[in-house]
Image (cartoon, rainbow, N blue to C red; front, side):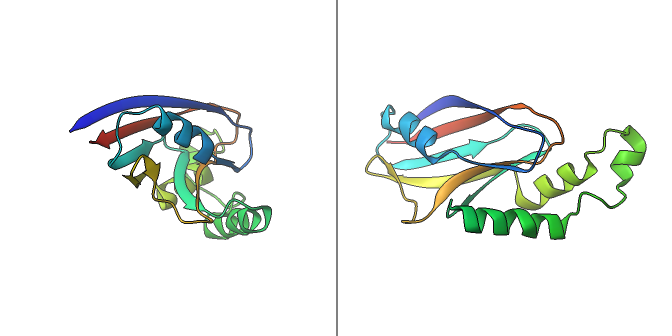
Length: 139
């Protein structure tokens, strides 16, 4: 079995960014020697998350609104009281979705559905350069 490690960097804003990473991950996978196995993605930090979705404006906005309903920005958070940085909601949102994602690789391609894309969600209240770690493993 072969294991390869790669990194993708993405610049985000101070809002709830939902960014399509599918093309970038496909490019890295295309350069990989792994034909069958998996690609595992992980975003370090406690205010970012990864998932899949159909990346079109309607459903992206629906997701953004659903996240706002689950963990509203404008309610009291203990984190904000302790640290005063105003991003308590960011930590809660990221914890609900999770920092990692694993996708099977079959014959050199990710086994995503027709309308399924990989997205980074950045919930922090300030711009960041996000680092996404990719680990491709298999044969």
